[in-house]
Image 1 (cartoon, rainbow, N blue to C red):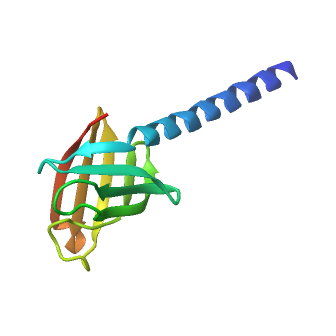
Image 2 (spheres, rainbow, N blue to C red):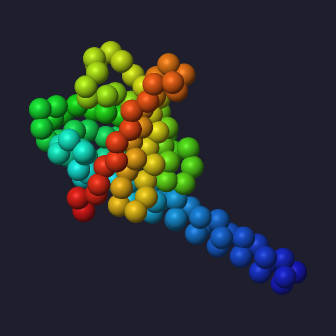
Length: 123
């Protein structure tokens, strides 16, 4: 009986630590980011997903992605907009977080046309 309780406690502790790691990973993706063109984007949690908005430059206020969902540790997938494309166009987006950077990629036409950029954390 004691072995079963210890095993259950260990399993619960492991699950709790995994949940904490996922939350911590997501929080690391929130903040202000320098884009390659010199503008600044801000990412935050919204509606259970990740949102990103340009907060400096000519396109201030443009929402590049909204409520995109986690697809695993440090990765989110969903629809996104490209600042240089018409507003009606959406792309299949993937955002990957790691080492103070966000890799932001959007693809169209079944993945045959893609554009990506690396954002650097300002925090």
